[in-house]
Length: 223
Ligand code: 4GX
Image 1 (cartoon, helix red, strand yellow):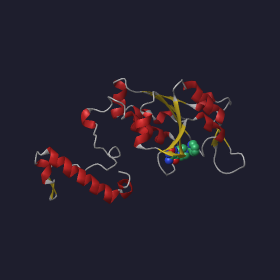
Image 2: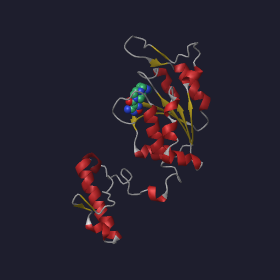
Image 3: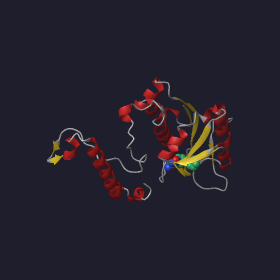
Image 4: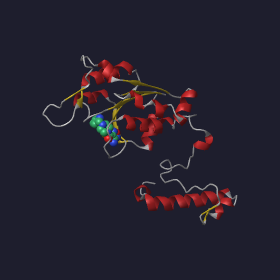
């Protein structure tokens, strides 16, 4: 998969995209990524990419022209162009699985009050990572990239890829324990040392249901 970010802040990406599992995905040839800066497509002598909103009001709006040129410079047949915005449909793990089937994602990161409404026709989808307001679309774009890339076949090692994971099953993860066996008087549930894998699986399922009911009752109705 290739992911291109359209961003005024390209320096934000390498520390996240080149670290850990995303870095390893590139070494394995499963991921390529890059940035395109709309500022490089500004016609203006001051490389202006934003302007004041018509009708007045606070803040600035991203101009359509540099954005359009930046997107067109990297768009190919079959590219999926996505705007990250609080107005978008909520990004979910299910959506991550769908996007993992695309060969090329173009993730457009807005700044300021947003983008000129006439730019919306550039986008195949508009996605939000949740109902809170950030300073730009860069973090949402990287959140999306992380969730999508870990779905690509071969990216996760066997021991990292859990079938029982939250949201795949519709339940929260079951409780996990590691050494020490006793910590400040709290013991690890005895059944986990039984060696009876059927019993352990049944215990984990019921513990996952209990945790979901207690912490995320909203998921319980969906599971
Ligand atoms: N999930 N923001 C984008 C500027 C903006 C506004 C409108 C395009 C249209 C966010 C989120 C988010 C803040 C990123 C506003 N760009 N994006 N930015 N939550 O809050 O995706």
